[in-house]
Length: 438
Ligand SMILES: *Cc1c(COP(=O)(O)O)cnc(C)c1O
Image (cartoon, rainbow, N blue to C red; front, top):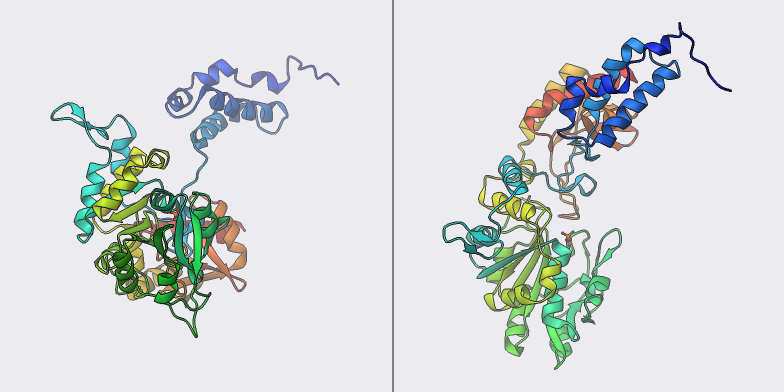
């Protein structure tokens, strides 16, 4: 059916596209949106007006609003009210202000491989390397790569491709969806030589397995589970002594990225202690307890770090300039958010949660936070949450700002541990809207 638009039809007064494109707010949006995206915003609004869903005189305001809300990136900032610090689905570690401003500086042209004083090419990552060595003094050398998995792949490839990696059966773990350590190592062309049993592995098991084909010994921190009961593992110092004795390097995959011990997490290994105990190399993630960007951090003896750095695969797992800048700023800068949230004072959390309840209603309940990201399983972090009806969770998620709370036992729990205190008022406003609109 053809629709003739008569002289008196109000649709005739829908502003023309060229007029809408000329609006100052629309012209300004060209700074951060493509022409196609802007055209799409205008088309969506004028189509609604043509269908009679929007009054013609409301078109201009609707276009300004649509263009203002459009983003070139669809990733949406989220306030993490789950109490889980290293939240895998929310991008693990949130960066602190120093890392954020380093990212902005590194986003343009930057002296990542240039010595500005002499004007000649320099080595990539010298700043991050120095920061890591200053923060972890037992390490002779450091190398940053794309992520923790890449660090492990590079280590086993450079030290054991075509040869054997000796590892305890109790440490052959699955870390996250689709990431199994044995598969990862097998993909490097190294052969896994499994020793011991799921619950018990002894030094003699490693010693008996060492032969002419051994490339390295590997010890993995089983971050996300714990075996309890009749168990035995071999400590780093004993394993390192065995390796030294037989001329075999020991690689320890720490996972979490603590550079030094944290009294709150006694079972979480750290790079400094592990290297002091004799490990030749440690590998870890940058975006777990280290609190930085996605990265893989390799620390250890110069001989082995350099062997990894010079391996052709190093180029394929190279860290980008932006992550490099953020990593350096995290390690050299003030305590990152992950550490602040981990050590949040429960009494302060209680006061903030009470203030939230006073503003929006709901009940203050005790609520344990978690390290998350597969780190420190079973370590509860004492804190509090605001208990709301379960139905509040979705409006909180889809609101602006988006707030992700924890849904548990038929309730929505808003935990402020991982919310910057300066955002408490935004959480309160989001909760108020979520409770009234739905
Ligand atoms: C998380 C983890 C990894 C993988 O690190 P990514 O940074 O996620 O690639 C490897 N090993 C252990 C023990 C881990 O906990």
